[in-house]
Length: 143
Image (cartoon, rainbow, N blue to C red; front, side):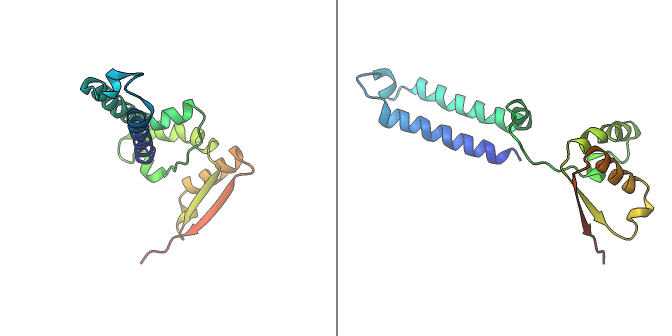
């Protein structure tokens, strides 16, 4: 999820720096920059790499900060710890907030789906939190 924005930003910033250094800066207006000062080029490269690293690590936080919508997926079996009881309890207690923020619920249905009490509970919780939310049923075949 974070790789694409990082690559796009890195390429854009690099292209902008090259354009500024080659075409927009004349030797008369900024001789220290136009002459190809190694220290200025190093500062530009380190700045671009630092910005890209920040985007790579904190992309989800930045999208929330600037109200940029992103798509994400929550797989309860994968996202809720199955072995550590304390982590599992924290994950289960957080599921209401996750469901409340969801626009769609994907049900990976097989014949045992309604035999597990947690599964119909998730559907009921989703419909309670999102009366207009979309439920998509995807039959899962094993074999």
